[in-house]
Image 1: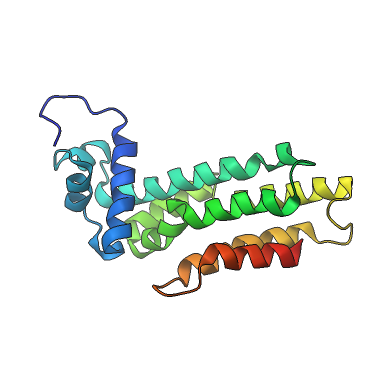
Image 2: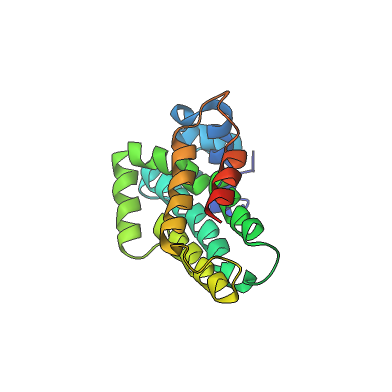
Length: 193
């Protein structure tokens, strides 16, 4: 535990990472302010000191932060046009969708009314989410079509929607013992490309 009065660098990230570990170990039902701060090894009031809206604001901000990271990766896809294979480039983003806490915790955010409201308001105001990622994938596929690496008859927007929808489905329908989602996503990418 950090001593009282000692500054903790990057408190947001410390708490976000702790929350991800709590959910990974004990499931979404175990996510409480106390569980997060205990896991982070910081004072119990740290979460509320940095997130005035309490756990709902914290969960919404965590999801938005992780979506932003995945969206940044996806919006970098056009820089990959003509490099590696189309399948490899799409797999990088697909795996980020499957492993990022943003999409994985979006379901949790939607079960908390206060977090859901904050999350939806942020998306409406332009925060990156599934739509940003879908648009980036479609733009990438269209650019690859111009190079002839994706068939001209491919509906890039439909493929992008299918990839994002598949990631969403795999995240929301996973359970212990379910097929490994990355390999399922790889099959979908191969079928689409």
